[in-house]
Image (cartoon, each protein chain N blue to C red):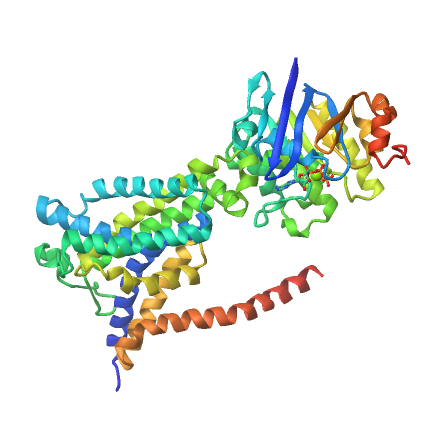
Length: 303
Length: 242
Ligand SMILES: Nc1ncnc2c1ncn2[C@@H]1O[C@H](COP(=O)(O)OP(=O)(O)OP(=O)(O)O)[C@@H](O)[C@H]1O
Ligand SMILES: [Mg+2]
């Protein structure tokens, strides 16, 4: 079967834009996993909750979808702070945090089914045409189509990942986070206020789920099991991008979704998610080799 | 008035009583030597003073304020800095970034550029200027120990706690280290200085404390302490300088 280059380009573009959405979900997971040592499955549930809350505020109160962020962002910040404070109170070890966030992940699915029903809910029919009708890229560019909502996903991902990367690399607070991540006890003896810092990081990471959730509600029909569909791509992108590196997670998510979409052009689409795990498997299998190579090179340099 | 006053400090680890009812005082600007056999509780006492470990009982006052329950970062801001017996540099920071972290978040918190300037000054003072931009895993043991001191000094403390910073160094490195410690006192810092080598401590210290099995054994001027029969007994029954 032959595929025109225009169709291939369109498929890759769609994959990249959907990857932006998964990248903005992976952002919060990557920050919490990398910098707080919490592999937070609940972050995916928060994203789902953000989507459903957006749906309700738009359909019941007729709010503008973007206005809902004024409520969901601060609310999720508080949730993030609360969960991290709980971990502090019980002095939770990494495995305990994994169990707790996994339990919350399961519970949230049922709670969402109970409150909003297990059926598909779709915001798209209610949106203004400007949101949903595809637009063509302007003239010098190839004749590809994009949906405005995908551009929203792109802008949200770029803004959040850009801000997070800048904050982690270049601000005082970012330096404190890096010191804490390496050795919290040392950071504390050097004057870093570790507890408030972990609370703030967790709160901000959770707040990004509100933004990602809003994009989800505009982009796809909602069901309570969505996080199970996301988890593969989001976790693999987080690991491939390097824990604690939001930009790496975004790039990985974009590349993964481009590969998945391209795969579906030639091979059975139901296998596409497996491609993601194939990439992870290859990466993990090759990692010892790349590490060995790196050590060879660096030891050769210092010798 | 003393800068630091520990009264009845007791620390239990489960069944092990690492410290029982230890008293210790340090005046501003003096070097206090803290010696004792292996496992006598020196590091534990230092950790309770720095806030790295909570005490089981007793009180710790610093600068006239009760800091017994204060967190480690509050004590750092109040003017207490410590080193670790086994150096613990932040591995993905360069040498100067390690030191700058203390200036950035310590007693007189600064921005990053000012902190890096200050870090380079401190590194020059401890003789590590040439390594400022290097990765910490390129440092030798002696350089790592001096990095520990540099990081503590960069907090600009009133009291600096040094845990065997000269242990494992060769004689010329140790001599450099002793000069460095004496220079801290000249800058107005008080020092608690733990060392196995009692000789080295006695030449530098204004006063000394001896711990044995988690208890005060003796204290006073180096001459008094070295001639105290209980101290001689504790050090394997032999004279201290043997
Ligand atoms: N975290 C800990 N948990 C349990 N026991 C501990 C802990 N830290 C120290 N101890 C015990 O407390 C006692 C005092 O230890 P500490 O390290 O303070 O001695 P030290 O005087 O510094 O010895 P050294 O000269 O070998 O450094 C020892 O018996 C040690 O085994
Ligand atoms: Mg010790």
